Image 1 (cartoon, rainbow, N blue to C red):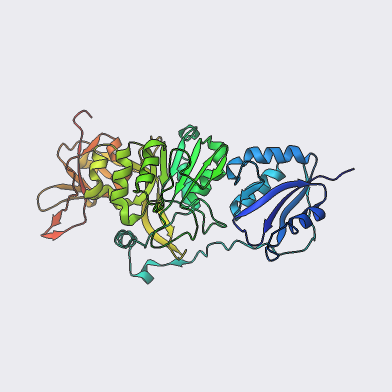
Image 2: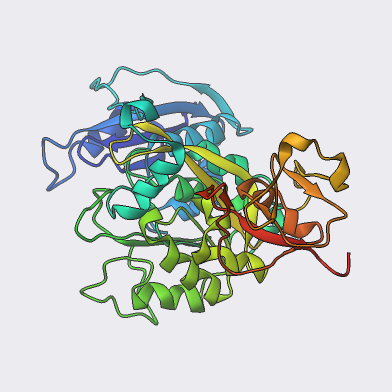
Length: 430
């Protein structure tokens, strides 16, 4: 009886891709790979995974259907590779009804080139001489000192939104490199949407990233597109002419064309150093978005008018840890922001009559303006009062209060400047 196998094979010098195929003879198939005419003798193929199955063609067809958006070309068996995607392929095969057992073979043994995971070295703020707020301030001021999001923070936030949010939508990650041979060179935003492409029912995923003075991702292309039919790194096919000087930046005319004409939802971690420009462009586009920025934006004059006009509000979660350009884990005060509906927000607000708020959480500044702390909100106070970021991020504007002025409020206590706040007031119809 003929044996039937599924295999995953990889070339030593092509670590960003792998091939998934079928064979009745694992040893002979590997020899065929290593005797390809014109192939460099130094570029040796070796198996990453092999297993025995009942019906190899049926399993292969199901793999093609499940991971079509991760295929380099529709007609070829080449798939993107990194450690996380590889685990997805293997788990799918092992869970298939025709899977029999994994095969451990010793053919031209080559050690699997391990993906070196990020060294989770925490750089303390004391060592940097910074506070979480100071880290973000530094990021705003230094163009190449940006922060990268961890996949766990993306999963934690995106799982809060119903699946229909993404169904048949074009998701645009306009600050992300989609393809790399490991987690270090693959955007976690792209990775999340690729892993859940079919589950979410996405129509298309478009990823572009800035490739100017510093190539942070060490990758060739600046743009990628994924659909149910497959992948292309020539994002400007068809209606677009690939511009020779396209740098992949979110404000390049070609990126703006994608934003305005194709995208349904924008989801990314834009550069903190260019957040003002980014917010303006994305919000003015009228598209749905889910992005990460400094949590102090909620009381920053450059952004307050967006909150006042209900064009943006906080998402569900803070983001307290990022990876810096050296891929070290650092602390910073980030926050998800969106214009997607928020349901069942965990309400940390303590709304009650003013005389029931503990005295230690009430102050009046030199001008007589009321200031409340620790998410306390007076329910029976008719004048404007000042709050810090907490209530703004916890949905005070969703609970019958409005922003009074489109700039931050700077209180003075005994002639000394206090921390910035925003002036809000109970709405007349509440």
